[in-house]
Image 1 (spheres, chains in turn cyan, blue):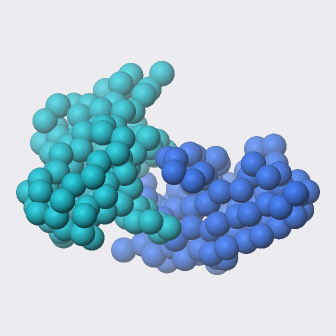
Image 2: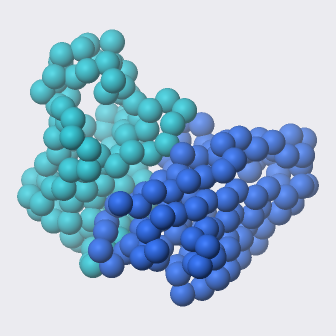
Length: 114
Length: 113
């Protein structure tokens, strides 16, 4: 069966510091991968998605970037965090193929920027 | 792009009553509509989904209906229980051209004993 991991689970970072969040998927090949952010008490905002190694699509322009160095690894980064970057970051995967299918979420990383 | 509206934003029902959450979407080409349940501090979990070739789908106490003409879909929970209390999100996507689920803003459901 498929499993999705995220780390760290929680993170407290000062404004202006860098960020690296990691997501890995097990049990499937060439998944579609997604990064979402959820601000406190709010809905889910899609940040990036990837349909293959090195292929990244950005949904919202901001100070975040994403990379997919390996088939089942998705990384979210920032060079300088802002207060507004605080939130619950969720990675998700879906089966590869044309278009989207059911998306399954990882356990999330709760980021607090002070 | 797709725009998904979800109502109500909060819903309080007594245990045993039914709960209905409604969503509308703007892109008539959308063809996949999942519903997620998110408990406090946890990840969203898929509870039911429907594709545009069917009008209704049921799974025990949960059902989803889809009206393609009106571009709206609804989640129905019958015989609610306190453990149904959570935030529920609807989403829509055209799976032939897009990869990103477009989520509603969520409904906070409280089931009181």
